[in-house]
Image 1 (cartoon, rainbow, N blue to C red):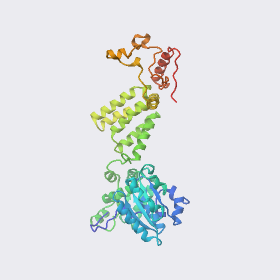
Image 2: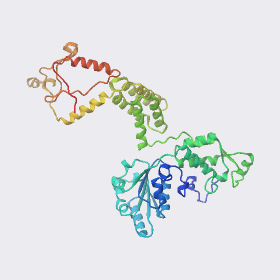
Image 3: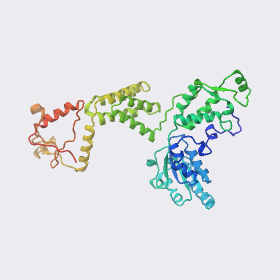
Length: 455
């Protein structure tokens, strides 16, 4: 697509921005016939709202439609650039318009504002000076003040599916006024599939890739080549082929926001796939995170946690393998070291599972914090000095290696005044079957002792 240098250029994604609800693509759960938000917009009754969803799902467009349907003044700010001074200016403008028209304030990336900045909106949203529309890619539960959330309804936008993206692509190729229709583009089936996959549910990304690819498209015929060479008004039949699209895309794009909710959702899915003994799903989430740019060592460290939390003594080899995966990656780097992490993940997904140590640790921690600073029994204390020996340190201690089977039957190791506890209960899986049997055999030799489970 020929571009001039007159400063009038507008990206394809901006030119094709829907001007009405009927042009809006996607979000049928919000804007389908009879949906509550659509009914409110069609009635011209806007309300304050938070639009939460991935990039390129139409949050900004929807905010503009809110204002347009209500014939309201539309003011947009970005939380990346705006400050308290900008908000006050908008409030003054809104106050001047009160009685004639409403003011819709659209704040993009509202999660970038801190709590005190968000509080600035509260009185003006409360008294109707502003109709507040915030957009965020992060979970509002964590990033938006409760006070602001209580005054605005949250709408969740979803990534566009293949049908939505196809519809948008066809519209861009056919529209001669705002789209690329004048170029008479033909798109190969393989090129279409690549574009849709690379868009990953993001309409803006799809249109940006399409526009860049169109600039590089080859003429479909000799006549088209001649027209393109002379700078003709049309593309005279340009063709978007698979190789050109692949060159523009560069590499597979997978949505992954380091440190954002998407990040934690994916690591949660990986952890739970391993815990659920599904090596295939675990591998998918591992590769999904790596493809999105996650630091492999972060995943390797999570593998260490999984080895202790979900496998434990049912198969202690898991912890060793996870440690070795960390060492291999640190020595080899990417991509060779990532295979060692994958090996550890698959092994742990297939291993016997037990959270007995994890549960026991949590229960013992609760007792350690809740029962106070109980004294160490004298017989368990070391006595390196004469005074300590005279005070009874270490007296009556039974050295386990001198007892039958290296077990001092009946010996007590908890503080005085604290009941015996049973924290660790081996699972009937893997090595813990043997561990449980050994513990029961030893406890059977303890005369008249019973251990209670912590409440």
